[in-house]
Length: 172
Image 1 (cartoon, rainbow, N blue to C red):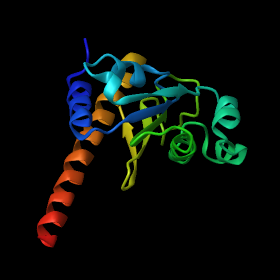
Image 2: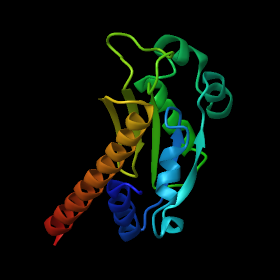
Image 3: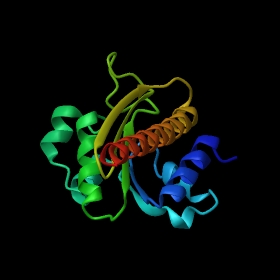
Protein backbone atom coordinates (compact mmCIF):
# COMPACT_ATOMS: atom_id res chain seq x y z
CA UNK A 1 0.00 0.00 0.00
CA UNK A 2 1.29 3.46 -0.90
CA UNK A 3 1.70 5.88 1.97
CA UNK A 4 -1.02 8.53 2.02
CA UNK A 5 1.62 11.15 2.88
CA UNK A 6 3.63 10.22 -0.22
CA UNK A 7 0.48 10.48 -2.37
CA UNK A 8 -0.37 13.87 -0.84
CA UNK A 9 3.19 15.10 -1.33
CA UNK A 10 3.30 13.88 -4.92
CA UNK A 11 0.00 15.58 -5.71
CA UNK A 12 1.34 18.84 -4.28
CA UNK A 13 4.46 18.52 -6.43
CA UNK A 14 2.40 17.83 -9.56
CA UNK A 15 0.21 20.85 -8.81
CA UNK A 16 3.31 23.02 -8.42
CA UNK A 17 5.04 21.41 -11.42
CA UNK A 18 8.13 20.71 -9.31
CA UNK A 19 10.43 17.72 -9.62
CA UNK A 20 12.16 15.69 -6.93
CA UNK A 21 15.26 13.51 -6.64
CA UNK A 22 16.62 11.39 -3.81
CA UNK A 23 20.06 10.38 -2.60
CA UNK A 24 19.67 7.60 -0.06
CA UNK A 25 21.73 5.59 2.33
CA UNK A 26 19.72 4.06 5.19
CA UNK A 27 16.51 3.71 3.14
CA UNK A 28 18.41 1.95 0.31
CA UNK A 29 16.22 3.36 -2.46
CA UNK A 30 12.82 2.77 -0.87
CA UNK A 31 12.02 6.48 -0.72
CA UNK A 32 12.52 6.87 -4.45
CA UNK A 33 10.60 3.63 -5.04
CA UNK A 34 7.62 4.85 -2.99
CA UNK A 35 7.45 8.08 -4.99
CA UNK A 36 7.63 6.05 -8.22
CA UNK A 37 4.43 4.19 -7.32
CA UNK A 38 2.09 7.18 -7.23
CA UNK A 39 -0.09 8.26 -10.13
CA UNK A 40 1.68 10.87 -12.27
CA UNK A 41 5.09 9.97 -10.82
CA UNK A 42 6.58 10.57 -14.25
CA UNK A 43 5.70 14.25 -13.89
CA UNK A 44 7.71 14.75 -10.70
CA UNK A 45 10.28 12.02 -10.12
CA UNK A 46 13.74 12.56 -11.61
CA UNK A 47 15.29 9.53 -9.89
CA UNK A 48 17.73 8.70 -7.19
CA UNK A 49 20.98 7.17 -6.07
CA UNK A 50 21.73 4.73 -3.28
CA UNK A 51 25.08 5.10 -1.55
CA UNK A 52 24.89 2.80 1.42
CA UNK A 53 28.59 2.28 2.03
CA UNK A 54 30.95 5.05 3.12
CA UNK A 55 33.34 4.35 0.26
CA UNK A 56 30.52 4.80 -2.25
CA UNK A 57 29.69 8.11 -0.63
CA UNK A 58 33.31 9.15 -1.11
CA UNK A 59 33.66 7.87 -4.67
CA UNK A 60 30.28 8.67 -6.21
CA UNK A 61 29.22 11.70 -4.20
CA UNK A 62 32.65 13.20 -3.50
CA UNK A 63 32.05 13.22 0.25
CA UNK A 64 35.36 14.15 1.85
CA UNK A 65 36.87 11.30 3.87
CA UNK A 66 37.42 13.58 6.86
CA UNK A 67 33.64 14.20 7.10
CA UNK A 68 32.98 10.47 7.30
CA UNK A 69 35.74 10.02 9.87
CA UNK A 70 34.90 13.02 12.02
CA UNK A 71 31.08 12.81 11.96
CA UNK A 72 30.37 9.18 10.79
CA UNK A 73 28.50 8.17 7.63
CA UNK A 74 25.22 8.50 9.55
CA UNK A 75 25.31 12.17 10.48
CA UNK A 76 23.74 15.51 9.66
CA UNK A 77 27.01 16.73 8.17
CA UNK A 78 27.37 13.81 5.75
CA UNK A 79 23.67 13.95 4.84
CA UNK A 80 24.03 17.63 3.97
CA UNK A 81 27.09 16.96 1.81
CA UNK A 82 25.25 14.12 0.07
CA UNK A 83 22.34 16.42 -0.81
CA UNK A 84 24.52 19.30 -1.93
CA UNK A 85 26.83 17.18 -4.06
CA UNK A 86 24.03 15.14 -5.61
CA UNK A 87 21.89 18.15 -6.52
CA UNK A 88 24.80 19.68 -8.44
CA UNK A 89 24.53 16.89 -11.00
CA UNK A 90 20.80 16.10 -10.92
CA UNK A 91 18.41 18.75 -12.23
CA UNK A 92 15.45 18.76 -9.84
CA UNK A 93 13.52 21.37 -7.89
CA UNK A 94 13.83 19.42 -4.64
CA UNK A 95 16.62 17.11 -3.56
CA UNK A 96 16.26 14.91 -0.48
CA UNK A 97 19.15 13.09 1.21
CA UNK A 98 18.76 10.54 3.98
CA UNK A 99 21.15 8.66 6.25
CA UNK A 100 20.55 6.98 9.55
CA UNK A 101 20.52 3.90 11.69
CA UNK A 102 17.70 1.45 11.03
CA UNK A 103 19.68 -1.49 12.45
CA UNK A 104 22.56 -1.92 14.85
CA UNK A 105 26.14 -2.21 13.67
CA UNK A 106 26.64 1.33 12.44
CA UNK A 107 27.72 4.36 14.40
CA UNK A 108 25.06 4.14 17.10
CA UNK A 109 25.79 5.60 20.51
CA UNK A 110 23.59 6.48 23.49
CA UNK A 111 23.26 9.97 21.94
CA UNK A 112 22.55 8.52 18.48
CA UNK A 113 20.64 5.26 18.98
CA UNK A 114 19.25 2.91 16.37
CA UNK A 115 16.23 4.70 14.94
CA UNK A 116 18.07 8.01 14.47
CA UNK A 117 17.73 9.38 10.96
CA UNK A 118 19.02 12.49 9.24
CA UNK A 119 17.29 14.22 6.35
CA UNK A 120 18.57 17.13 4.31
CA UNK A 121 16.28 18.93 1.87
CA UNK A 122 17.32 21.33 -0.83
CA UNK A 123 14.48 23.49 -2.14
CA UNK A 124 14.83 26.27 -4.73
CA UNK A 125 14.65 28.87 -1.96
CA UNK A 126 16.27 27.19 1.08
CA UNK A 127 17.82 24.15 2.69
CA UNK A 128 16.51 22.26 5.71
CA UNK A 129 18.27 19.76 7.96
CA UNK A 130 16.18 17.48 10.17
CA UNK A 131 16.97 14.80 12.74
CA UNK A 132 14.45 12.30 14.06
CA UNK A 133 14.44 9.28 16.33
CA UNK A 134 11.98 6.51 15.48
CA UNK A 135 11.11 3.25 17.21
CA UNK A 136 10.42 -0.11 15.62
CA UNK A 137 12.16 -2.58 13.39
CA UNK A 138 14.20 -1.54 10.35
CA UNK A 139 11.21 -1.50 8.01
CA UNK A 140 9.16 0.60 10.44
CA UNK A 141 12.01 3.10 10.80
CA UNK A 142 12.40 3.42 7.02
CA UNK A 143 8.63 3.81 6.50
CA UNK A 144 8.41 6.46 9.22
CA UNK A 145 11.32 8.29 7.60
CA UNK A 146 9.58 8.34 4.23
CA UNK A 147 6.36 9.67 5.75
CA UNK A 148 8.13 12.40 7.69
CA UNK A 149 10.09 13.44 4.59
CA UNK A 150 6.84 13.72 2.62
CA UNK A 151 5.30 15.74 5.47
CA UNK A 152 8.24 18.16 5.58
CA UNK A 153 7.97 18.71 1.82
CA UNK A 154 4.21 19.33 2.05
CA UNK A 155 4.72 21.84 4.87
CA UNK A 156 7.49 23.61 2.98
CA UNK A 157 5.44 23.83 -0.23
CA UNK A 158 2.55 25.34 1.75
CA UNK A 159 4.89 27.83 3.43
CA UNK A 160 6.47 28.72 0.08
CA UNK A 161 3.03 29.39 -1.44
CA UNK A 162 1.95 31.50 1.55
CA UNK A 163 5.13 33.57 1.37
CA UNK A 164 4.77 34.11 -2.37
CA UNK A 165 1.12 35.12 -1.93
CA UNK A 166 2.11 37.57 0.80
CA UNK A 167 4.90 39.01 -1.37
CA UNK A 168 2.48 39.37 -4.30
CA UNK A 169 -0.10 41.14 -2.10
CA UNK A 170 2.56 43.52 -0.79
CA UNK A 171 3.55 44.44 -4.34
CA UNK A 172 -0.05 44.88 -5.54
